[in-house]
Length: 407
Image 1: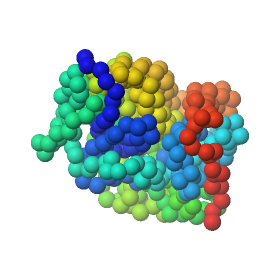
Image 2: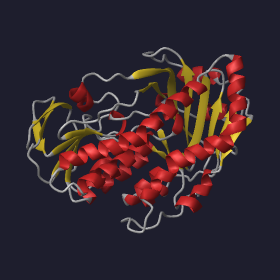
Image 3: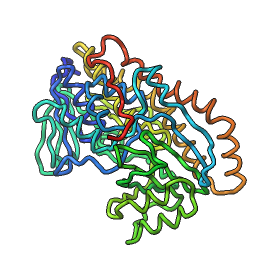
């Protein structure tokens, strides 16, 4: 295979991972083009939980300040039963002192917009539906649904769990349904039980409810319940959710009542076992296309951000062999993300139990271990990795002071 420095990288997918990869590569002096199949660059209506490792990655990209203008910094992550009984409380606010950056919650649209606006030139092309590619010893040619094509040195598939690039590389993905569905929404709400920096994950009988503020007066929530895949909601979904969570402790009913029904999003929760190969030749994968991580540990977006920085780092030091750099990137990131895929899946199964005996066992386990072993494992296995970007040579300045009060 011919070798030479990668000067032009094509990226399939305009989500968080694709935009972050384009920004990281641009900062390394590489021309990038992001191809998004939608006619408009959509940013979704959900909220994101960004752990400190993700915020450190954003700081390295030079955009943490813009995100922190609206994103509340979390002080304590609470875990409780549907009755409101405390199972655990993680002092995530302490991460600022230990690592120099907070754990935050942010609207996906805010993070997406910040990354998009930071890109230089016309780096994003919408209405560009990638349907396949061909590669040779000199480069990659991407093919689009409208019959057009584009040529580059490398291709990054950042097009999600159902991505075309991954399927073209290895055949249909063996995605697996978790057994539960997530309903998400956002409530314009000021509530005395939801101070700035709130996070609470509540566990019931095969049902969960998580809520956190993503901006002053704006709360993101998620209701999770067991059920078959492929279902669709009839009108009245908000009333259905109110019935499901009737009698739950805290502000759950108020959050649901304040949510516009037309903004409620339903989605089957899927994952995939860690895969041994992410790429071939001049093509690689990133984010959910490579390692879909269920929401249970809040690391999906964080890992896509980390992917972007590690990919850019390996390509920046690739010399004349970018293909070998792709394989090194994949090896490093597989070792990082595979354990997170597994633990997120296990926690999801723990949260989905329905038998009363299993529920009591879960609650006893969490009361005994959540504030000690579980928190220590989360900090060591998820957060501490971000210190590789919290160094004196990082291009961005110190992370700005997080927003912790409502104007």
